[in-house]
Image 1 (cartoon, rainbow, N blue to C red):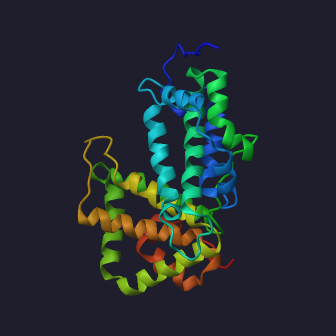
Image 2 (cartoon, rainbow, N blue to C red; image 1 turned 90 degrees about the vertical axis):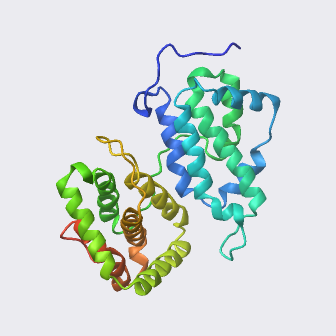
Length: 280
């Protein structure tokens, strides 16, 4: 079967003809249970057809290939602990996880490149993924009982990146920096450690990692007006306070309210004035 080619340039995911399959795969990544990793690993076997399909899927002119490579980096960061191994709470062998990630990356590449792949190439790259997830279903990550606050906080981060041209964002940034300067860092770090332990117990480790990655990209991205990127100590401090708060909010239902308050107090200017108690 000849290779199928698109006649139109695909500029973004919203206009991608295979957006449904792409979103279904990406949405599962932070929600993937440990039990799925051995299944993906056992179903993945490299073949000549698979290698050729992968090569074509990752060619420079393939649809949104830069976005595909960014997704690969995200996958690697979400499963970095599983690859390193050594922690008591890890249940999957690092080699098994490493093979499972190959199956995941092939599925991502296939979904994005479907318009330029043959049906056989697409099917080969998707084979291991489809053996575990035969249908497309968008699975939203569980952001917990304070999901609204998590969303509000993460949505505010891109605004902080443009603070040089947004007086309101500049004021919020300064408020966070000031609050962070008077916070007891030892108590704050202890609260973050408690939140991380809660993430382990509630199987939200990958959601935690996704928040940290997406938050970092949001606040350190280029300002859309002056095209400047900031990586100074103050930006790092504000970023740390915001991300720690968002991660604490994700597991708020499993923490004492005062622990959540320690983490969210420095960024209170970014949160709705009326919020439910963490135990509600």
